[in-house]
Amino acid sequence: MKNLILTSSSGLSLMLADRADVVIPFFFRFVWGPLPSPHELATWVATRSDKHGPGSHWSDDVAFPEAEEAGSGLGLVDFCERYDAIELWFDPSPNDQLLLVWLLDYLRSYPEIVARLKLFIVTFDLLGADIEGLRSWAVRDVDVGQGELQAAFTAWHAYRASTPEACFDLLESDLSALPMFRRALLELLDELPSTTTGLGSSEMRLLALMARGYSSASSLFTRAGLGRPSIFQEFELGSLLEGLAQGSEPAVSGLDDQLPSLRGNHSQERLNAYHRSRPLLTAFGRAVLAYNEDFSRHNAIDRWWGGTRLTNDRLWRYGSVLTKP
Image 1 (cartoon, helix red, strand yellow):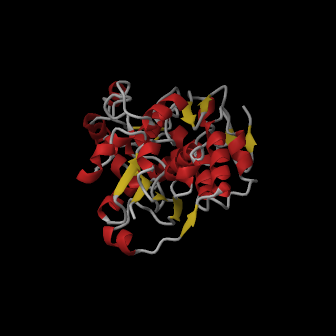
Image 2 (cartoon, helix red, strand yellow):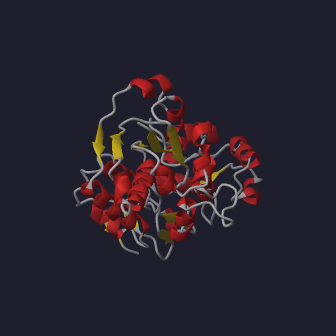
Image 3 (tube, one colour):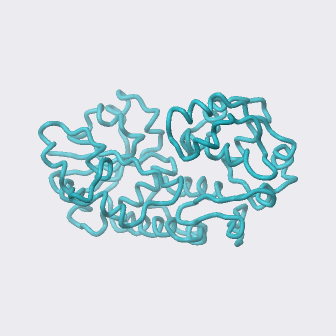
């Protein structure tokens, strides 16, 4: 029986664990920046054509065994049809869970593929798992049915919406068909601006770490997840740190002078500039950390949360309730 694994970039080690004939990783970052458009996503999973540039087709990220390489130009669904069993391996992290609901929403239109799907309930961090463990661990799996498909449809379209209201309402829904999604959703909602400080959870965590004496970007980025992987990757955390250092009342000082000219550039040069930085809390930053000041009342906000663009005049806030702008 031929089997296929669909996973995230965190599950790359599954390629070496001999659990499937082929492992397809997905590298989209749905937790950062504007979401890909439906057209971009549809093009990415379509049959390869002249419209596909480098890195714009699902097969570009796959290490194919020689026997399977002939299928690399197929659409994702056509490629999946070659396999008897299709396993979904996505860990509890918010980006993995968003990849899972997007993929289930996409595949629900293909019942012949859905009939072969098994969802593996991964309760651990795939990125940190050793290959021997991945090879031998018994991970609970369930057949994908209407409960999983409906939950994924609801969750994905809520996250794509232009306001976070539908995601907040999801907390009152039955999400038991996707056991890891509720925790991921709560982590995501915590990244909305606070009703008190105007900053998300990761931004406040960066300020708190600086207050404890962590004065290098590397130490901040390593500890940003409080003992578990951060929602955000290194460059994303760096962008959050830069945002805290900008505006008429910056909360942070001490960033490298070259960073403004490197904004948006994911190069080694920008990474080096982060690691040359020695970020420190300003007096205003200490006031924000003490919940005595609101960062957004003094500085510009412009970032994405799912399909919601957060700006000062459209600043959805989250505490125990969701607050409209």
